[in-house]
Length: 241
Image (cartoon, rainbow, N blue to C red; front, side, top):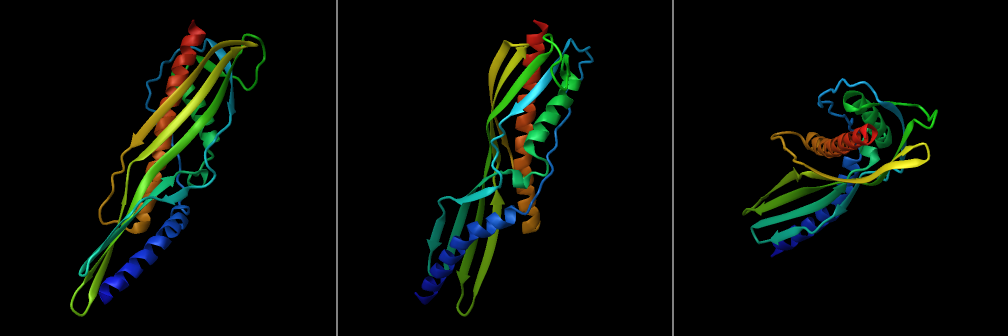
């Protein structure tokens, strides 16, 4: 019973502190965000030019961690506990400001597949303006840290294990394409992307957490890529028609 009481106290103490410790640790990683330029170039001359205006980027300023329901199995010889945490990606974990990444990626992708050029500012009524509003930008994942305590006759052993889970990005964007003061087209885009997390074996905790954060950033990047490709496809059709 004495062993059981000691293990329960240890489990509760570790469980309460792990969320704060993990929050501090995960906030130290600053991951580059890249855009995968793999779309086939159309090599079509620009029909017209477009001015891009990007509004409202609701990504959180910092990456946050919140505690989820855990598990405690206290036995006399074998004791197991796990702390499950929800992680929400914030700008603090991304090396480049997300609005800059979105705008730059749109411009670069339009050079590959767009039927339009990018204008710095409207010059005449024939020039189009595309208003882009990011309504939702959320990337979530889950992380688990578990520990096991085994009591022997005159000693005990303790082990820890950590595991990351897939990241899911939810991106909602609304657009309005104008020609002068006339709204030519408007559309809402709702993109959800789940990025599997392939956890490497025999890596340090620091490497594991860095890879976990990078996976969340990659999920955001791929979701953004799909949204931008869909947007450019629709703008091409609107201009052509």
